[in-house]
Image (tube, rainbow, N blue to C red; front, side):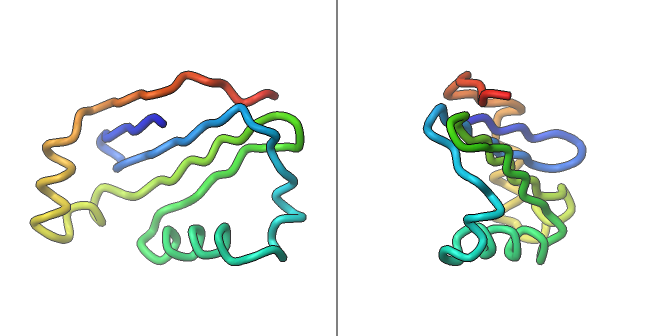
Length: 94
């Protein structure tokens, strides 16, 4: 996991070196991906999924800074969060 808090907002990236999946085929199998995208888009954010079968997965969620400061609680979280955190450096296959 890697998170970055900068002038644009907050980005959280989760990377694994698992088996990957076909994003287009996954759309009809549950609501997980759709729900994540809808929730992020509702607040002006975005979800990027980079994966393919046999190559691992990288999921990046982005939230704009102005949304993070809508409440005192979220503003405190953002101001106290480190600028960059990294717990894994596994790369997704190209």
